[in-house]
Length: 140
Image (tube, rainbow, N blue to C red; front, top):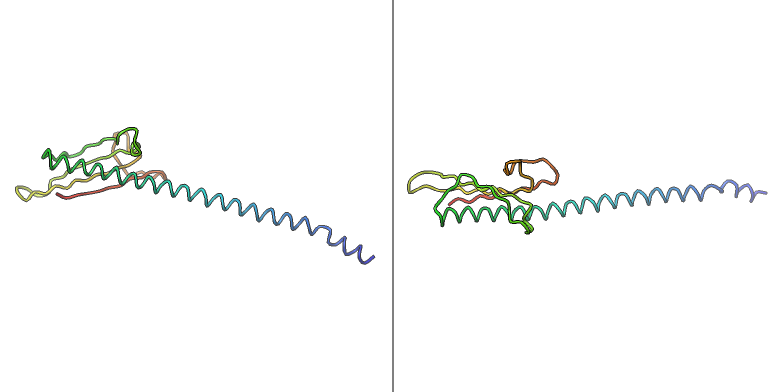
């Protein structure tokens, strides 16, 4: 009789343990999916940042070329990167500013690349999570 009473008291313990384990495992699964998603997003932004740097560098080299070879200092030039390349989603703004005058004149060349330009093709500060831009400058 004592044994029957003891079994009746313990009859619901297995289901409570099973539900607890299901809840804990579900929470771990949700946490792992969240970590995976944020890691993928971070890796994608890192790649886009490297591409933005390369696009800005190409624009800076173009601006230096224009100054050295063609002896021109254009106030502002905007152009998209070539289609069919890994940089095709970026637009580059290159500007040249004259500092000083006469024989001591220096030139500041600035290149800004971004993946989300405004309607005019200018790189502006965009506060979207997937927005990437890089700025490089050189003084000649």
